Amino acid sequence: MEIYCTRPTCRNPVNSLPHLDDKATLKIVQQEYCRACGMPLILNSNYLPTQPLARGALGATFLALDRTSESRRLVVVKQLRPRAELTPPQMATANRLFKREAQVLAQLGENHPQIPTLYAYFELLVPEGKSNHQQEFFYLVQQYINGQDLNMELASLGRFTEVKVVEVLQQILPVLQFVHERGAIHRDIKPANIVRQKNTVPETDVLSTGVPPAGNNGRLYLIDFGAVKQVIQGGTQALTGAARSPLTIVGTPGFAPQEQISVGAVSPSADLYSLAVTCLCLLTGQAEPNSLYDADNNAWDWRSHVEVSDELAAVLDRMLLPKPSARFRSADGVIAHLFGDTKTQPSLTYSPDNSTPEMAHGQELVTLMSAAEPESSSKETGNNVRRHQVDQLLSQLWSLEIWRQAVLKGAFAYLLAITIISFLGTFWISTGFWLLIFGASVFAQYRPLVEKVYFFTITVTPTLLVSLFFPYLLKINLLQSGMLGLLVILLMTCVSGLLVFILMALSQLIYRLISAFFDY
Image (cartoon, rainbow, N blue to C red):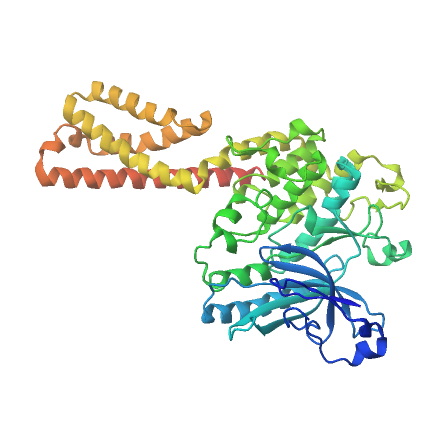
């Protein structure tokens, strides 16, 4: 038997131990150590890693043997490595949070058939080489899913049809709803983290469990939850919410939304965003989604790469909106838009000899997506495309960067107005020059036209309001009024910036009220 050393720096990790091929010896042996680095090979007294499955910046994954089971079942061992710069108090916090998140993961796996079961979690403290320094590693031991992830399936079978993508959504969305209802977030949904199990479940079991069987279109598992990895990498940051470095943010660039990558903010809508990007990759055959994203317009440009129904496209577009509050709030919301009333949702039958699922009673894909919906839902679906286009456009107007720039521009607009009036002395001519100069500074920016118009309107309005309520300030030369004039200018400049903030907040509130009224 060959046992694989899990120390990341081991130069010769493969250890040949033929005496462990004997079942009796395997059961009674206390421990074996790596011949090259001295690392313990039998983890938690039970698990023997046999080969590496994956390595990354956050750790490594191994296929291992559970010697305590009669069948010597295979398990997956995930090793998580803390950042080297963590202080002892931060390490203690990471240790505590690791146990907490592992317990959450264990509960999820115990209560849902499409989340791998967590068998064990533990820490391992070992000497680092010949020094007195101790290295600490964290381990998760999970159920091994014998199958292929969707990345492998995409590489071997090519791009997914719309039917297959809808089937992926039909299986994964209920899993996400289950996860989110329990206060957990996956954080790293992508094709590589969705595994299709090989056909090992009798079809008769489906009638009693309601869970799709394995096979070409069989049971999908959601693997590799990111919360445990984040607390190991983030230390006290995961607890305090302090700013994180790129290394402490869990999520795959391209798949994770901007708020998750930039500041580590996660929510159910972030998982739905990542699931939508996963669907784009499957539909277009692109393993990496970057080529489908238009960075200049801050929007996804994927429809030219594939033809799908308007219903599915509208749902995916809404899941992909850059503003979290404009996306679906829950997986149930996506399910309702795609399948209507889930209680009357048509069931899929799985044929092991067919690469695509067939509708029960011979229904077509359009039936899967709309026929089971109530009449009101069908009418709403007809407006989805227009609604989500408006959502995508407006949601770009309230990024943190826009807020910051708008407040500064609003303050600058008043300062510019006072300066021009003080020099020219006439109100109307000064106003014309002011609008010309300020408008040029806004419209010269590299932004979409609608964003420029919004930006110009929201920043000019406060100066006009200040001029309306304090007209006497325009009749005196504040620049020649000494210290008092400068204080007035400073005060009114701050007032203009504050008014910009208030106007943006009001416009966002009005948009949300309208969206809620029309069930956006």
